[in-house]
Length: 217
Image 1 (tube, rainbow, N blue to C red):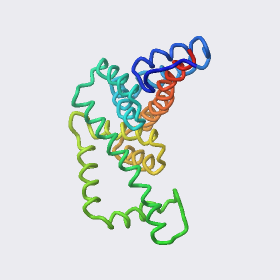
Image 2 (cartoon, one colour):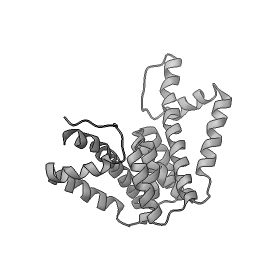
Image 3 (tube, one colour):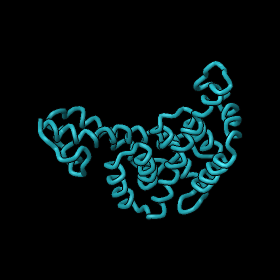
């Protein structure tokens, strides 16, 4: 086993090229997914890269943040647009945790656990009343993150759809997909944002596999 100086290093990303030698079919499969997910469709390459940049933060993947910052910038995304995509990701991450407090509320009430039942919004509404100042803080964050600015509210909702999938939170997926539909966003555009998230999940794993490649050299 080779020795490495760091468990997370920018140089590890280049090591993923070794999988072309070790597992060529799997790497080609990933590349096909990558090309399909980021091909322009209802969403432009720039819009997809903004979704990906938000997803990179939810995935907590420094390789992805660095890589997709470069691709988004190349596709024409401005600093303000990138910053707003990050704040959407932050708001979605907070939402996923808050939404799971619906389970907390049932526990506090001594009710039978119902993890992802249809009444989760009612349970969450009760939880949010318990600490008004924190609840108001979340509302302020959510409002600011989704207010139109350099990015439209519609594009921010698509970033949120991608982030919710990478958060693996059914409650957030329910929230943001329905919000996107209510905003008049077409189903193919929502599906494309979800496919970006699917590719990002695979891409984050591939990025971190550079450490495995460095260890195996």
